[in-house]
Image (cartoon, rainbow, N blue to C red; front, side, top):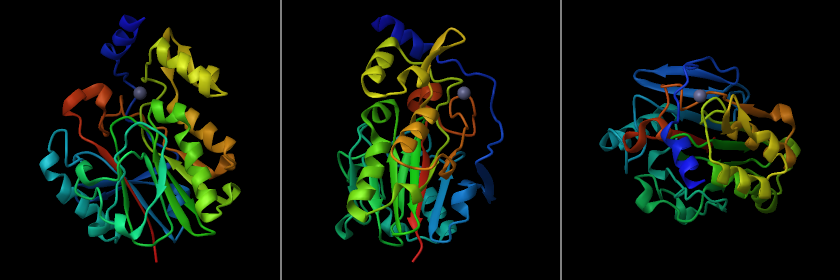
Length: 282
Ligand SMILES: [Zn+2]
């Protein structure tokens, strides 16, 4: 079984599907910086967000061109009109912990993983002008806006975080800390490994079955390969947490077969990181 799992990784086939258009996201060119924004979330005046990917690597700590990541991060902050010195990031450890940003956290992780908030995969915040920065090379990144409070939340949900209920915990923490009403929340799920390409081993399927009520739907054999649909699993998880289905935008762009994005599965150690920037306007 271990061998089968290894094989699934080794043969991570790059399917000739991408690039394709996204119905949920639009691309914006700012010189050589390309930003993607969710359609519905873009209409929220109090919410700032963007996904930024190639040609730049937004991880200062790893991958091709990481020495230019800080300059790239600062450029995105300038484009979005948010203070780069307050960029705050979680360490992203493939778990489901979410914490609220306190003023003493502002700027932590802005220059890389070394100073990022440890142990956590998601952050929530009700203070304007504190940009949260999340990184991905295949894992879904989720952003949530609560226009009523107002407040924001983010989480990184690879297969382990998804199975551990990271998105569900994000909504629960927003309810607990801010009194957010899930029915009013609006969410976006970033480009990430898609069901077209994201093969997993039987071990992953077995673990998913112990945690996810929709495991049979999201981890399934498709065309002879066992694949994990992380887009659907996280959308379903947000719906179960109380978000209306039509409040959730899914990019439906696959990082593995769409070379506009960084992919660890496809590129290994050389993979850079795609970033998601999220903040509130004053
Ligand atoms: Zn794909």
